[in-house]
Amino acid sequence: MKRLIISSERLTDDGVGSPGPRAPGAAQPPGEPPEAAAGPPGGAGRGGGDPRAAASWQSWLASAPGRYVLEWEQAGFDAAVGDVFGFHAVQLGLPVLDCLRANRMPHRIGVVSPSDPAPGAEARAGASGIAGTPGSDWRDSLGATVPEATTHDAAAHDAAEHGAHDAQAAAARSVVRVAHFEELPFDSQSIDLIVLPHVLEFAQDPHQVLREVERVLRPEGRLTLSGFNPVSLWGARQILLRGVARPFLPRQGHFIGAPRMRDWLKLLSFEIDGARYGCYRPPCRTPLWLERTRFLESAGDRWWPICGAVYTLSAVKRVRGMRLIGPAWKRQAARGAVAVAAPQRSGLNCGTGAPAAPDALTEAGTCSRASAAADTRRSRCAPPAAGRC
Image (tube, rainbow, N blue to C red):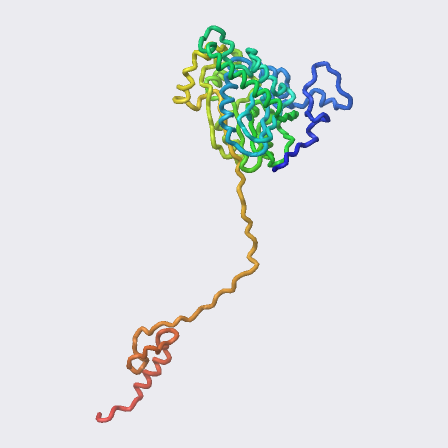
């Protein structure tokens, strides 16, 4: 079994990780340098380490469209990681979403930033039936307006049991708290599966995050990530109404399109083997209008599949194998020319005119020029035959 090594330099003395940002006006701990008192720049990995940005992102996830996105991504991640096998699986960020719930690896680790909430708190809140929490269904706040959302008591009971199961799984999972996702406390080529739910969009340096993921991922390991699609109704509203209306998505995010993400992954020797788009409903803030536009899910999946508000990508890390060819120390000697016997072309003996014997063969297969000239001179100098004048 592989051994997972966690670097001790990147964790604090208590083994939990770097502490979160202190409140304004708090006293500086003794021995801490002044530049580290305000927290590392971009240390949280979201919004440059600003607590207000992290609070804005968490509040958006608790809204109706945020829970709608979490519900779709939960189903997408369950389908993407369900059949991935190995020993170690890691999820970076977004502890409100259990991306490794359907995975069966023995070691599942959650890596969170100082601004992330405690893993399992949202799942426990959703299991208790508190409306407006990321663990609960976004249709819960509809009340009596939509009968379909309030008449399924059995479904609500199953959702509560599922939330309790998620809370137990999140509590049993190992958690590592780091200052930022640009440096991970794992050994090189030690992880079999890494999941990045909306991490690259809120990271200070998304390229470095991908390079670090490529470093810790073993050959043939899998990477699954999700992000907001700029080529969608949600992305168009975010861009066109910038500065005019309140942004629909968190303003701190830098949304990266799926084609651009494919190029980044190909540069790091990743092979894309799956992509999914979803959330085709218009950017509505109320659960009532999200429920009324439910028919757009099937229509968008058929007529404009690449215009979903959210996408997921799955990739495999490929490492090209090399076969070393050493120098040829033993060279074979050149083979000499071998004489091959061949029959005569004329079929007569040279100079006699008599038929050649079957075994009268020369090395070259024909008479040499010297013997032919000697026979000619001999015939000219011969005395005339008897009886001639």
